[in-house]
Structures are given as C-alpha cells and as structure tokens.
Image (cartoon, rainbow, N blue to C red; front, side, top):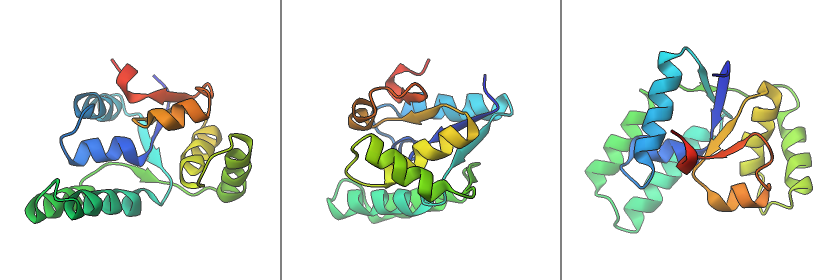
Length: 143
C-alpha cells in the first residue's frame, strides 16, 4: 500500500452517513489506519462534508439528530488536512486541463498529484471527467 491516500468529500460522506458504498469507504479508512497510511484531503473537506450533511437534512433525507451526529463525527476522523504551497495554482491548471465545472474536485486531484498518492472518490462523473487520470480510483472498485 502507498504512504498516503487522498479522499474526497464523496468518500467522507460515506464515513459519516450510511449510504451506498459506505462499506467500501469504511474499509478503506480502517485498512489505511491499520497500515499507518496517511489519509489526506485539502482543507476544504470539513466544509464540504458539513454542507453535504446539511443538504441531506434540508431535503429531509436525514433528521436533525442524524445531521448533528454526522457533523460531530467529523472531529473524530483521522484525516490530515493539507494545503501545500502551490495547491490552488495546480488545482486551477487541473480544472482547465480536465474541463471541470468547478475547482473543488481538482483540489483533491492536485493534492493527490503532490503526494504521489491515489485519490479515492465515489463520484463517477468525476472519474469519467478525468478519464480515470491514472491516480483517480472509484470507490466501488475498492476491495
């Protein structure tokens, strides 16, 4: 296994709430921790996860208590939030090169490039947009 893995918010949501692919997301988390592999993400991860939880609450997919518990769970996650020098410039280049609609996904990809680590996502559209981009892995393939 690598020295680090990068995860995006789609994976983090599956740690906080039970969703499709939560089993794979939790296995990735546990396996990484047990193997002393750093789990990394850009600093926007907590904001994206909190927003994702809120959107589920707003659409009445979860209760207020479930939303509170999920956001409380953020503090217990063992994820290194990293923003190395040049991350935003690399993310902008990546977003342009991959014709992405927003910069958020490219921040995760730029961090994975910086760390020479795989990027795990549950977002199939992102995987398709970057054409698999070598280091981008779809969570559904995690074993």
